[in-house]
Each structure stands twice: as structure tokens, then as C-alpha cells.
Length: 151
Image (cartoon, rainbow, N blue to C red; front, side):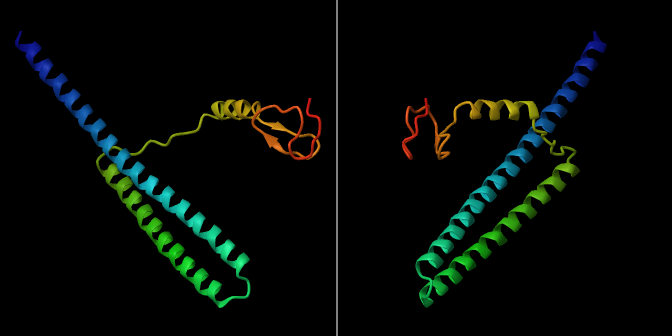
């Protein structure tokens, strides 16, 4: 019976080690995910700022006001790009820490079959007018853009 107790203790240590490793992996993954989510949000803000610059330039082509507004937008973009660079350095630091802890991030490879299936499904729900190429989510009898018979 004494041998059983020792075996149980070894098993318990293994389980505790696996749980600790899993907890560490989860913690690193959550932290990386939060940073990536921040980066995505900032990238969207940059996209909006660039769109605003285009609108400012288009609406105020000969105005000094538009130049100062564009410079302001560009300064915001630069600050956001610097923030993204810092977040990317933070992710790299997390990757290094996870390597040191022995819980490296596993690379997730896309399932190409799944992507093709999604593309096929998506394509089956898009309807185009043969005349003007207007796109609809559902079948139409007549194109709303040019009046072409789509039956």
C-alpha cells in the first residue's frame, strides 16, 4: 500500500505541473490577445483618420485651414503608429517571457478547406446584375440600379 501513495504523489505533481503550464499558456495567450485587440482598434482609428484626411483635402482644396487640419490628423496618425509599435514590442516581450517559462505560443495554421467552404457559402448568397454588375444579398426580379430583368 505504501507504493500506491508514492505513485499518487507523483501523479499529483504531474497534474499540478500540467495545470500550472496550462494556466501560464492561457495567461500569456489572453495578454497577447488583449494587445492584438488594442492594435486592431488603433489600426481602425488610423483608417478613419486617413479617410478624414481624404475628405478634408477633397472639400477644401485651396484652403489653408485644410492644411492645418491635415497636419493635425497626420500628427494623430503618427502618435497612433507609435502606440502600435510599442504594443508590438510588448507582444514580443510576452513571447520571450513565454519562451522562458516554457509555454511558447503555438502557431495556428488556417484550415484551407474551411476557408474554401466559407467562400463557397458566401458566394452562393451574392447575386449580381448581369447588365450593370450591381450586387444584391438576395435574388431580385429586376435590378434596382438599371432595371435589367434578373430572372
